Image 1 (cartoon, rainbow, N blue to C red):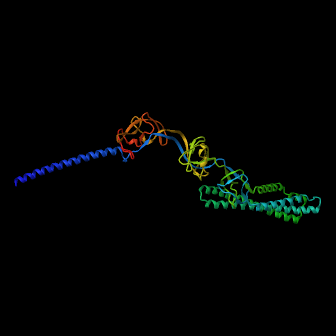
Image 2 (image 1 turned 120 degrees about the horizontal axis):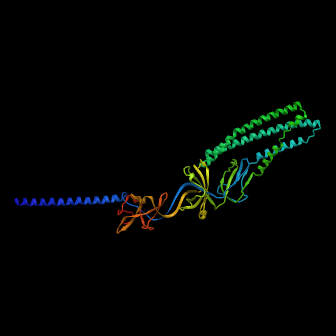
Image 3 (image 1 turned 90 degrees about the horizontal axis):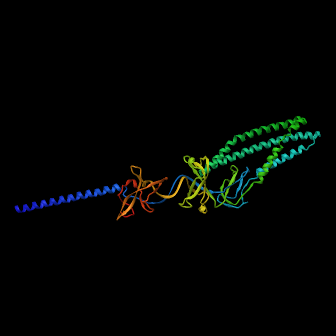
Length: 456
């Protein structure tokens, strides 16, 4: 029994010794794993580092603007005709040739006004030709003069009423268009128009009141003439010298009638149309015609940037139609008037690179850069890649392959120019194509890099 007990004790001691060895091995292994993890965490806070190739990049400072591509040489088609539009023969985007009919105005009201005034002037001239030596003629002239004066006042009253009706119709028309328009710019345009006509209603109505008063006085005067048969001196005073004014009005109406049909002054494309059947010529403007193949940009700059924008500044334009390429451009004009509809100040941009003209289209969206300083394509890295030591000396880390790993190697650089995102640098130890660590400020020289997609 004693021998067996002794063997059991020896086995127990060996077992404890083996357990201690295993435990210490586990502790040492954990310490080694934790140390390796700590080193990896210090160098790679996000798990992976990222690198960027050292290459030429565009360095610039610019102000952004949004706008649209528009035809360069646009000509407005305007009119002095105040009648309703009877027919519109074209729409935006249509190609037209010089002389093509664009729209046509109503003529019924014009014909009635012309006929009435021509009749009045004919009767007036007939009255003037009556002999003043005949008492009977003198009497007839007296009566006719009174009637002519009354008719003249009635024409003036009818004209004032017509002017009010036209103004009111335009006010209602543009009011309805304003609150039914889907486009904000179009709604703002119609809002300005109906407010303009609304402000004219009271003055035009006052003209009706004045004309009504003049008509009542003329009518009363004519009645008195028939009753009292006033003498020839008074008769002469009744012959109002308003013939010239009526002749001017007649000529204006006839001129309007000659322009009821509007034709294209040139060949091109309808860039904008303000004409609608049943409406009126808004501020006299009907259409805008431009030539295909020549474009510019109408952009809008915010209030915070407008004071920095000057004619002659370099610019670039990018559109969906032309892809990622920036089209070279230049600032032509800068407006001093804020556009509420477009929430900015208008800036006219000239496209100096005509290579993409055939790919552009009128009213297509454009994103514009207006450069306050343009350096061009130079060797550069982004801001995050550059760090500085305590003395203010700049440096970056180059990713250098060491066997199967990549190591961060410190490279001193000289900052030449700092743009909005990239920094132009120079260094004899960097060449085009070298990989620069993007998160350089989080590293130190000799750090092991972990780069996704690359060995190491």
